[in-house]
Length: 446
Image (cartoon, rainbow, N blue to C red):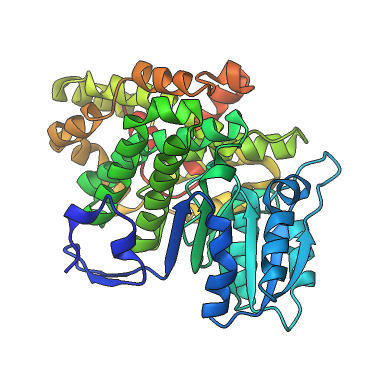
């Protein structure tokens, strides 16, 4: 019988269904995870065992050189019928998980293809995950850099009509992470993977806020799995900074555990909170301004530092101070009514405002304040001791910044390339990226 005590391990959960203490039955569809030197060699034999003789390898120009050609040769040597799809960059020389790239891949999936292999990092995996799900093909993962936690997850973050949204798709059937390959990753991509993991401090706290204030469903197993994956990365930060194979193993194991935690509960709550909302908001604004994209994990790491500052400020407040702050806001009418939220979304999202309004249940012009919204100020005051305890469990922002600095990642918006004005806008508008309770939404009352 599997238990929370095994949350820091990967293999026991593979291919399992678990009756969880949270009341749900969790299923892990991933059958195999290989994180070792020479993991690429294991893919052809696994494909043969599963009866997949027709494979499509999906790469871009960089991952073709990093691993694509080697894997192509290994598959041919194993007498598999294998073809190659090289995803093309856009006019700015970038690859984004958008409609253009999705269609390009779909056109390369012939009726004979049985399994699609993502050879790359986050973007390639997001596209392959979605297309594999829609076209009912097996999905294999070959990470070329430990840059994101989405390798094992079920959600595909896609940019549709300029709006970043996560669409339910499928987890990979198998993951083959070659430590020798990962150790050659650019330092910036390694730092990005660490930044994505560091953001779990604030995403897990945001999930707890939802539980405390709204009774949001919470799973101790998924929480603990993410927490142990995070602890693994923090404990081995020096090895990760060195880019050693041990460091790559621990980072990849942490990223995989985070992905499995999302797979368990069927959503990204254990691993994505306000820090991801800032990251997504910056990304969407960059798209609107036709600017070059920033690394996802680098954005998440910097955003986590910003969220930790909000948590620090909240943890310093007494219940009396909170009650006074809320009363003052209510007295001067500084509260977010549905009408004011609509106005903010229109101001903060421009051409994609309609999609954001729909995400927040505000598409109808006659949308009214819910009973939960009306009761929330009193709930915050009554439950402040528990809320404050959640806030106090987030490490200080300086500690997160120090950890990012050790792996060579950016720690401030200036280092990242986000202007102070955009940061200010994101702290005001990014809470609408997802209809999900986070420290940003709590902070609007304090």
